[in-house]
Length: 464
Image (cartoon, rainbow, N blue to C red; front, side, top):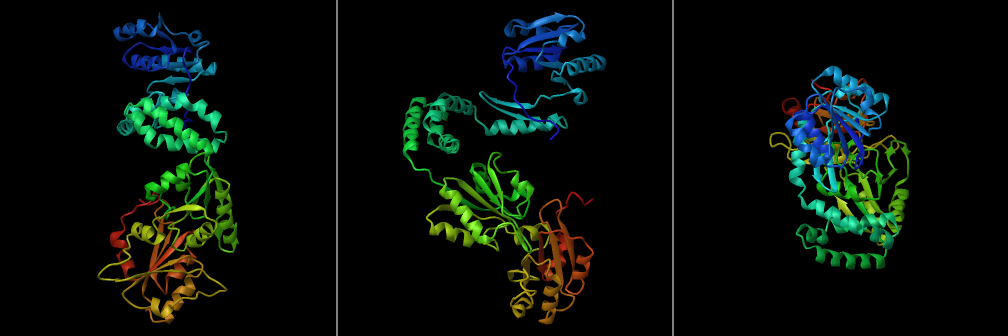
């Protein structure tokens, strides 16, 4: 993040604009919306800027810029066509530690103007950090179409009752829940339609009920998918944004964690081979205790919580204690990684069934139905099989699979670090030994692997 986003209060604050042409006029108009006290310094004053003088009470100085013009200013903008003047303005403002923007010269800027969606008092700002102002404007247009003008009315409605709610609901977490219910429900619709008196009456009734209601927690068991945050479901994203606490696993990607509400508490309970940060029984108890304390808890798991995710064990504990919960399915690693690797799990010429198994080693052995897994015309997907890869390949060969039977290993599927190794049961273990593979990984066995080279559509950032 090259620029930190902030909103400045400029009402009645002195601001300087150097230049008085077309571009300067746009900046003056924008600053004028904030109620700033604007001074304009320029040797030539355009008709447009002169027309704005009375409306915005501009202090126009028809002269050449000098360094003293920036003194006591809260913010400075240079909008001239002269590089030397722009450099002088930037240097003078920098010397006085005043934020400065030089239009179309990002190297001289200490701040930049974002593309703005104005639903006052609700404001959205979009910036590309100067990399592509046109792209920022395109995104602004998209957001403009998604946010009706009535959202400004809703923000004003909330502002009117903010202090009242704070006086009646003391706990910040409970106030947040209350406001989420108000701003996402029937009362918001009344405000949107202009039925303000009805909205106020309904608001007061709901506030009275909120004061009397018992604080109750809830658990959201959410599948985070195989890694690509774009694969999250809409429901998963919505619940992540409202959760007070997020309890997450090792397989949850950084991109998905970026979707979590910023002020939510984050608790890591990831498991690695022979290194569990928290035993499963303790995780079950943690979820229950957090919910019983009134928290809304997002239990975030890689892939799908009901496929080798032990989600069933966790909700059993919640049911025993009468705790409300929701289950949000996720794209399991088998579906996600196979798709991104261009390996169909079923194909009428190769495979008429697909079996998911875990290759997790216990006491040096993998206890699976090898005879069934070695049968032809099927696809086998093996989770957590990296450490036991040699054992898996040999067991399949011992139970009837040919040594040249196709097999693939997918590292960090669906992410920019995805890597796919293909080979046979006899040679893939040796490939992996020298490949510096980093978990999580997924193994796919079957002749569908032969389609990888032809159907490999996903190009990672590291590929040409």
